[in-house]
Image 1 (spheres, chains in turn red, yellow):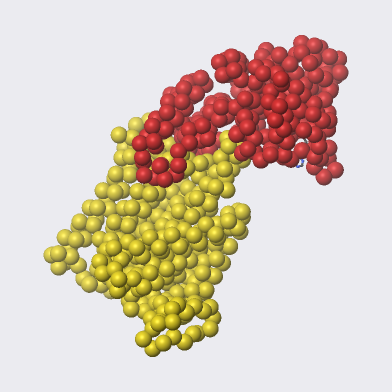
Image 2 (cartoon, rainbow over the protein chains, first blue to last red; image 1 turned 180 degrees about the horizontal axis):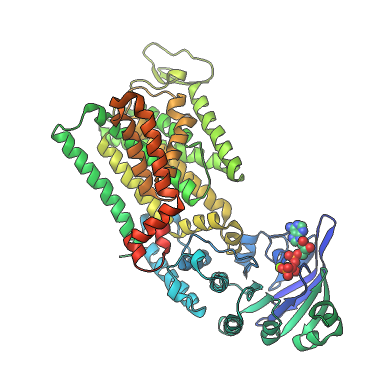
Length: 252
Length: 350
Ligand SMILES: Nc1ncnc2c1ncn2[C@@H]1O[C@H](COP(=O)(O)OP(=O)(O)OP(=O)(O)O)[C@@H](O)[C@H]1O
Ligand SMILES: [Mg+2]
């Protein structure tokens, strides 16, 4: 069964039909790309998948469960985690604490336990620290754990967002332009990391990206979006050679 | 030792040292009775400022209604101690019971008011907290509760009749009279320490991180599964409860407590907010220092009569500059020990 099954998803903002008739099916462990020109509706789709926007029509199934219209918090608990195109870190928290916020639901203890510092508090915090450092290590951020998130360079902030999303132990990871603002070296490294995450965390990943090198390098399947509608869908190589796609998006 | 732990211990240590110095001054007769009279109010303001700082600095919401929660704590605590003053003869025990009730009542009010108020943002939230603070004060001003052989009598707005030998608990605008003097500087300091313990441990726990995450970015907090309403309400309720505890201390330092604008009006709310802002938003130690210094200052300057308010204003401006101007921040960063050892760390922001 597909991890994510989206049927006929659509949304209107007033008169603007931002996304229309969007279908996609993503299998477990797949690395799936969503591409398209600026304003095509890619981020809007992420916002609907995570409950930030309520779709006007269509249904979203996660592992066979209908999650359409649920609240963002509930959708994360159901197993969808994401990063943001315009980075949204907890700026005044340390790098480590950003990830620990992601561990919030996985390592629960009560507020009273925390205030009284009962043994369970120490045990849980120790486990959270260990887990958070483990995640930071994947992104080579463990050396900066004590730094304020806002003091990280741009590329590392993007990585921290992925680490924080992974901390919620999702079934599906949505990455919105993870390579934006990165130099070619950083992008190369990021590609390796994304593959590593997929392989080692058994993760299903849907990513939006403009960097064609990254897309053709790591995505197995693609959907091309144009003016809110699907222009092409299928295996990466086939889609990227589609004359329609070349005309509408890739240029020439 | 972790940096935060050390930082907390410094604050606790500071409070204890100041306490010991004051005790020494009193014992050696080096403190005027005027000064001694300021000790409990100073503790009260420190406690309420700690509570408000949780709301402003960690929840990130500006409240100008905390005098209202202080008022709830003061009146419900004093009513309880008055009711039980014959049955419970141990002063400390009586105070603890009054404290528990006053704190809980303030927490309840914080919770109920938080439900509508926390849906608002920024300036709107501030204005509505201001309104609720005034509403609380005004309701208590027209509240009559009496007890006699017939049982309890209760009225809003209409003065009621009770038997001659009956007991007035709250007599409308005349407030609560003949309150047992249960507060002391020692109790005040203990309450400061307990408040610090609660807020420090809270902000360094899972719930505290959730609260700060919501402050920093609500949308991404939601995206990692944080229950926004729950943690906002929790922070606001705890903040109100601490203000209520301050109110209980305040009331039991007076023989009569009335809900006047000077006591529990927005003036008080704003004064506490001034302590929080000048002491540094997010810094509980700063709140205490500001509360103590700014309560002390007008009294110290009393001899200068005409220049008193002028100097007070200059000190306010100087503290503002010291804590908030970017240049001073850089200067402090460069000249602090932490600043000399490499990069700015997260803990410094606390
Ligand atoms: N909340 C909103 N209200 C009104 N219009 C919106 C809203 N959110 C998105 N849109 C519109 O929907 C369309 C799609 O926007 P979206 O952000 O999804 O594009 P995108 O494909 O992510 O583009 P980019 O590559 O630039 O990130 C745009 O025309 C945008 O203006
Ligand atoms: Mg976008």
